[in-house]
Length: 522
Image (cartoon, rainbow, N blue to C red; front, side, top):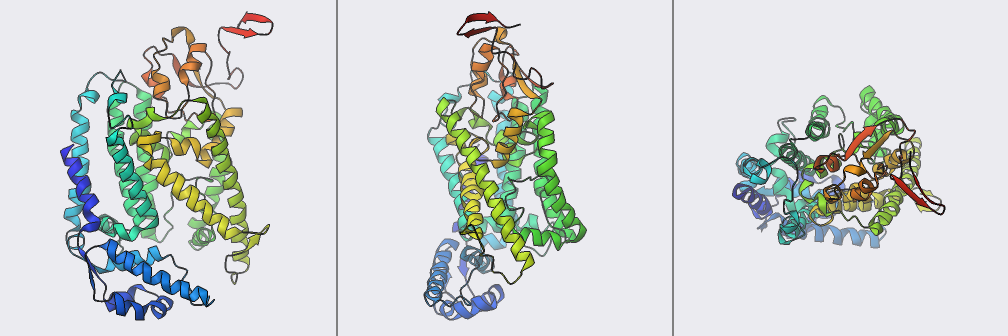
């Protein structure tokens, strides 16, 4: 734990290491002609040659100048000179090229002191933890008495760190430019001339966390073959499809795409820049475009019919994989009350409707841009800006909900708050699973001892015990089929099954009470 905390401390301190000094050469290299025309004079007066103690202070100074000049241009309605490139992207380029000191001179060393020590410390802790090396399965392990897992001070600090990191990554990446820089050596193993982007750093953190915590998951549930195979599978999907393939394909001048990402989770599928990039990539790009349509419209509902949404949410999806591994210590924090179930249904289906509307607007925008390249991408549909609808969806759902809240709030809301309340793909598959699927969790009420393990560890907030006590099959659109409820049951009451549709909902229990008295189910 000491090694891990040391690595975390070094990683967290990276934004404050080194100095930033913008030169005229860097300014000319990194800014385009329009940006140079607008910014060169002011930057020469205020920033060029001046030494800043860290990337944060430089970013703040540059962004103040950028925003001030842009507002002046907008006030004059000089739209030809207004700079539309996000200031955070320009600021990141300048910081990356102007930093002096350890983050630039010792990237391999800092990579080892952060990722390397973090991995080593985590694995030593996992392998030596008596709770994990004790009897397999879940007992009364004191999770509600641990400040790391009961919304105590350690959990709150963890949540604050995660939320802060996500906010900086999405909205102010120049402040964490040094964190991004230490990933350069790994990025250059794929393409030697390229620097790591913020998304490369994120993918590296994501994949590393899933792999290390996946090992923990395998040890913890080593008595259950389903959990072992499922964990290995979802981690491999992340490593191969969501990380390696995305980096390897550009080595051959092909678009780096995660081939397992389906609409509407892949909400930018019809964005004009994405479609243009795919069609410019030849036959392979066209294949990816067609594959995305087939995956979303045919493969996803077909697989849900035969196997339930678990085939994707618990075996393939990166969001689900992170929730199952990194989020496993917090799975019991999901709220099981009836009001959350009602809110869940309104929220997740509301996001699905929003995703459908956004896709219609985006398709309209892309169609117009492709048929008339002179259009500026600001077309209106039903009196509403298609561009604005797309932007708001990306901000509210793609960034805030899926990222900042979905992962940052693991220690507060549990590990599947995004999957439960916000994922439009989960809503889409959930509708199919609820009404047209062969998947169910069967229960043997006669064996249930009401220990509550199943409900406690259900990350989707399902009161599994209530079903088990009645001997009622669990057919819920929110169930992701992770199987942990079955794995923690001491009596083998619960079983995940793919059977015929007939009788899928099962009986309401051995005795059914009604207006006409009661009867025994056959």
